[in-house]
Image 1 (spheres, rainbow, N blue to C red):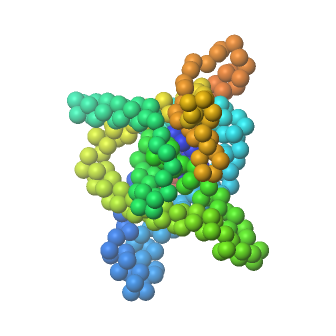
Image 2: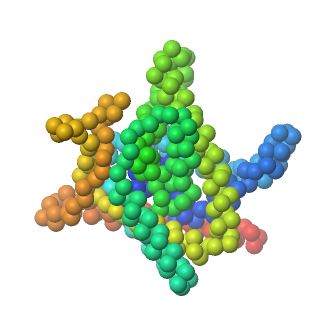
Length: 326
């Protein structure tokens, strides 16, 4: 989920959905409420841990953090060196997730079809919006945190792609994460010179506000989604299916990046010296190219990854049922 959340167009919620623990994830987050804080402030740590499904949440969050600072760095490298193959693999994963959700959904009627179509239209519309410019206002950063966490709670809606549209993807998911990584590395060897680095401290402050916004959004969305899942599960699933199908346009592998340029055609850079992404120009693949067939192979690989996750999710649920029966 950590790696998927960082890649624009890919939703970490899809991983949870296909892995078979999406509802447990949402319902566990719902337990972070006033009762949980009362248990915590009264020193009843064991009760707090059990009430909030602490083992599940801690393992999940720890795995996401490890992924964010390891696998995501590998993804950054391959996005720079072999971008086509990375997008092809994620395109295959989303195709696989559509199959996974649709194969067990047997509740199509007027309401669910309409909801699915609306989800599809919104998903397609989002994928063709133009990104805004970077904004480091702390109130806006907090808002970005709330919005970006949607990728964890709403399968098919990519939080990182939303950050691209808001203009803050590089600031919040590249520069800030790298600054935190460098800071932790320096602290580990006893180097605290970063406190005198004004740019580093400003970036860390931005990351802290973004994290606070993400935590706020995560808990808020989880309460809303748990209610929706309980009372409108079929309609919610249809909307998610539409969202995911619409997001295929975002991760279409064969595309060229369009950078923002001035009147003379010179590519503009942001405050960090990075090219400003304006949008993507999509095109159909050339089947006479060997690279195209390698990309198709990676699409198949992405589908296979989802099938393996499907198999794991089924086995996990079967083992849980056996333990419950025992």
